[in-house]
Length: 117
Image (cartoon, rainbow, N blue to C red; front, side, top):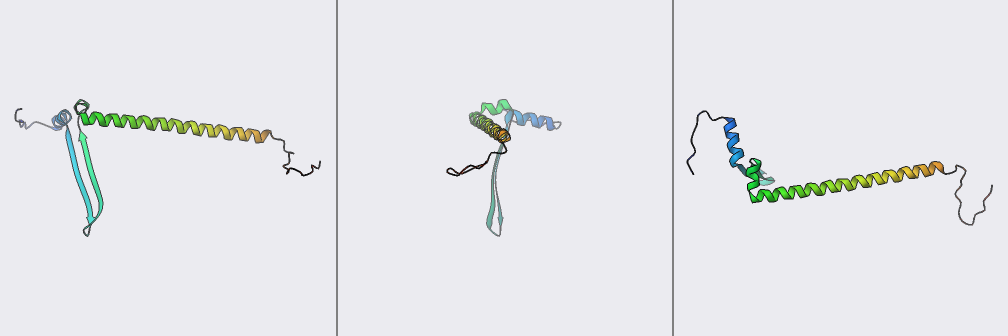
């Protein structure tokens, strides 16, 4: 591996090309304290790379598979929820139609009571 060369005309495009080709990993642990008492802890891990570079990493392939599986599960759950909501709406509509068709003169009575017309 050769030593990196310094080019004074290298700009943002060259930097971005290098980052996407090689990849960049940022790992930071941040702790916010007040009077020596820890209030918030933050663990940040970020990886930036081109898709070919990322998919060459076995860890990234596993991460991609997990993310895709979670997305599929969420999509199925959303479909199931939509179907349940549609069924409830149909049930409510059927109950409303049944109430509209019921005769208005119908009177509820207890068993054993006499019906007076």
